[in-house]
Length: 284
Ligand code: AMP
Image (cartoon, rainbow, N blue to C red; front, side):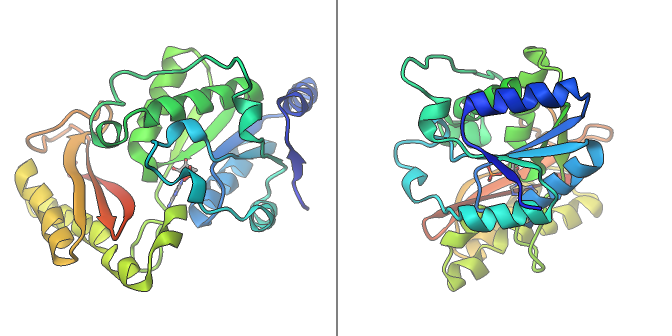
């Protein structure tokens, strides 16, 4: 069945109040649209964990830098509605920017620690925008559970910290990265890639795989593990933004893998002018 489309904050409030009166569990999946299997995996998991699934489709202007791709971010609302229907989504919230940031809007959420480093350093203000819109959505929908992808690993940690610190009380669920058959992490931004850039983009997942193989064979130094990723980036002529081994929760840099300390290897690189990210757990 086609999902019901809500456009205004007032509609969401009225719909949510009715839902709570009926005592039904709600799962929320925030997205920026141009949906793919990665997004749909979150929606399907939401179906398992709640009675009702809502998705937001909103290209949030406050999380884009002045030189980033806000105006050309890919959109396909009709296609997205069909994909939501196929994943069992009940309600799609698709507001205009002015509904979330009306005149007089002046409240922003900053998560100070896990927003540091990695994408936080390369995209100033990005996580402030993310934390702000996700806080708005969690306060508006008051879901029991909200689902996010590990594909955006730092974002997931930012949202977990904010949910904890602000006592929002939502069950934040992180879901594994869904990949294309050849290993490329699915992303709406993959649509920007030419066929040749798409091939070269495989260096991210290939590099992470090479580092994982080294870790399994006993290598523990961050420098050797990150070099394995960099080698693949160079071979594919991709421009590195960062390659880092970090503590999986605090996201602080790790010089070596340590037994019993969960670690994550993260990479960001440009294929042509498109910035791509990927990550995976490593060691342990
Ligand atoms: P976006 O529309 O890119 O803002 O993503 C919306 C949600 O889908 C975020 O929680 C992302 O982490 C998640 N997501 C995006 N790509 C993937 C993927 N390949 N696998 C799993 N989740 C994803």
